[in-house]
Length: 374
Image (cartoon, rainbow, N blue to C red; front, top):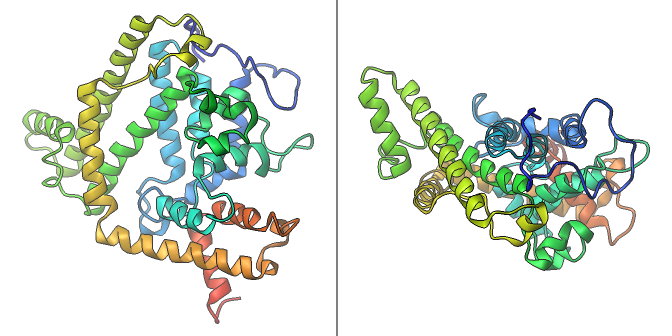
């Protein structure tokens, strides 16, 4: 954390602490300890081989969940410093926000949620919290990572009221219609800035998106025109990178300016006042609309591109096949994932599948269903 004083509405330290009390860390803050535990977790390492849009084996230069999380943390820390918020908390939330994602991105999540529809469903935000609360097995004194309340609250971006009622204090804000800390609000929008713009970069790099398709997107075309005018002889690859870089800068600058204006108007003096206010970390209405246009084009032109849809169909089939096979005969599971009871079987299988990387899921499917594999 920088040496500048934090704003009165920032999270200065963990007021609600950890579920299991521990001695205070020496030489680092509580949120630095959370960040370090997240980075050293097995779930964080697995993010290297979990997809964003493109399945891991499709190319070495496309974003993975790991590189995406690092980029979110970088954007989040930069904004937090400008707003005098707690950088360490923003970083911890940013690095942990995707720990519960399935293999194969949103296609995998949708397939696993469908498989779990009669068993409580599946949602990656809840799974990320489950990873840090229960599934990581590193410490002698507790399951999970025993993170601070504020970090856990920031990880849980969305939650249904039915699930919130089962989560104790970390779910209370959904029942009370309250907001999380500004650090959590910031990490959420830093995530949006990162994945929208880097999906543009990966989409163009892959050839599934073209500059012509993005010409109708104001946020892209405005900066593309600036780059071409300033550097008329620049190679296309560098034109794209320069355009995306300027898009990110425009979004970050707008977010800072609008958030500072929101804070001035609402004048919160404490974290408690942040919780009962409207969301304060936000884009301006004009930038929000530009961002919406970008997301709409990505949805129609990239996420629904026939090549992406083909891989998504394969991904759903792999997830469904694995889930059904394990439900039919749980003896096919590795011993450490054996369910303790019939009631816990589906959730244990869900935990196993959600923790897989893309390539592990593909190999596991072959081991179970291909005759030549063992």
